[in-house]
Amino acid sequence: MDEGQIVKEWIINYHQCMSSHKKPSYTELVEFEQQIYEELGKESELTTREVEYISRKKIHIRFSEQKFSGARWTLFKNILLNSHSYSVSSDPSDPGLLSLVLHEIHHMRQGLITAMSVYGELDAWQVGYRFYQRLTGRTLKDPLIQLLEIPLSWSRPNLVKAKQLMKEFSPGYRIDWYSLYPIHLEIIWRLTHHQPDGLKN
Image (tube, rainbow, N blue to C red):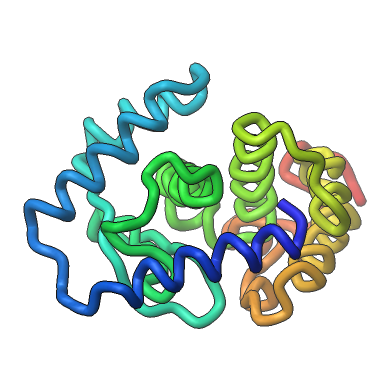
C-alpha cells in the first residue's frame, strides 16, 4: 500500500483502539481470532495452507505494544498485533490487517533461522504485500513496487537492495540486525564465498 494509505488506515485503527481501554476478554480474543482466520480461509490456496498451518500448530492472535512494526510472532505460537494500531474492535476483513497476519504466519512456517535473515524478510514482505494487492487491486508505489520486483534468490546484491528498500519504507525497521542469509548459510558464505545454490557471487 502507498504511504498515504498506510497512514490513513493506521489512524483509523488507532482511534478504534483508543475508543476502548479495557483489556479484551478471552472470549473476545477467540472470536476476533476466528474471524481473521475465516477471512483468510476465503482466499487463495496459499492462505488456505497458512490457515491449515495455524489450526495444526494452534497459533493464537494477541496484542502487544510495538514501536517499529505492525505485528510480530513469538516462539510461544502467538502472533502479536500492535496494540496501538489494532484491537478486537478492528475490522477482521481489513486488507492491511490480514496481510500483516499472513506475513507473520509465513515467518512461522519459515522457522526462526530463516525468518531472522534478510532473505526470510524479503520472502515474507513479498507474500504479505502481494496478498494486499490481490485483496485491494491497488498498485503499490516505490519503494514497495521495487521490493516486489526483486527475485527471491540467494543473490547478495539483490538482498542488499531489498534491505535498503525496507529501510527506505520504514526507517525504524531493524533489518540491519539481520544477516543476508540464514545464519548457518551466512557463515558458510563468509568462509567459502559460495552461495547456498553453489554459485559464486
